[in-house]
Image (cartoon, rainbow, N blue to C red; front, side, top):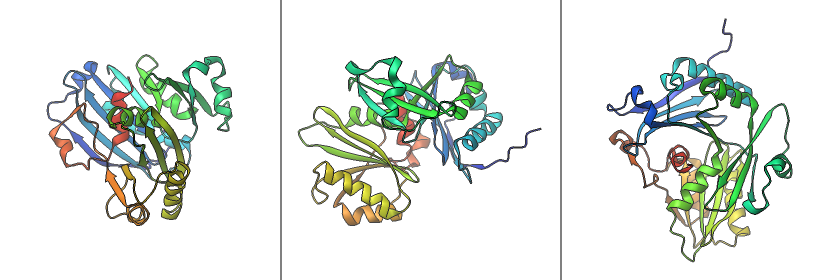
Length: 295
């Protein structure tokens, strides 16, 4: 008997009428896993179009094990996670356990050693994986929770499962869509309790890190700290913003107080979206859409 309680709710769902699970063999399933949410999107690779999005909010979930349990419960009821014929299943994990290493220095046999310089690893609790950024000539080495990883393998098997760190999806998308002129550009991706900050210059990625915040004051401290460290002027630079932030939120208000020029980002442009996506804020679900670029 299943004794695990349900601690999730479906907060948003859209599905194009033209989509059917019988099309799964030429569609990609994208999944975003965080401690606060589990999100899915489906992209039709023939039409190069997003056709499904589902957003599950996790409630009173405090540990990776609990998140993995909720993923299994959702899978038991959700046809998207029961389908086994997807072209690709690509999953992004959000955490602070990652590091970028130049491709010329990367040795797969030592990826745990690279990561231990930046993160405390637990052999029984963490699974270490990597993703190669050809556009950066760098490798993103990251750890994911073993319980969640095992849940994904149990649901989908290994054949079609691709796992990346969320920063890789963001890096790929921002590098692809940012006009890299002489000026350096700073972008942030906002989650509940975490903010990813990236700086791009003419040559590519210059800075990427994930910070945990507890309050709006923590949040703006990290943003301004990085701007100062990167010698970017809050009075002059334009800050591009994506993620779970709204115009009337305390985070947005404190951003406006300290950064003069704020631009809410847009969806990736090299893919189409069902008309049902048009009512969504352009800057929301960027992490899901960006998985389309992590080939």
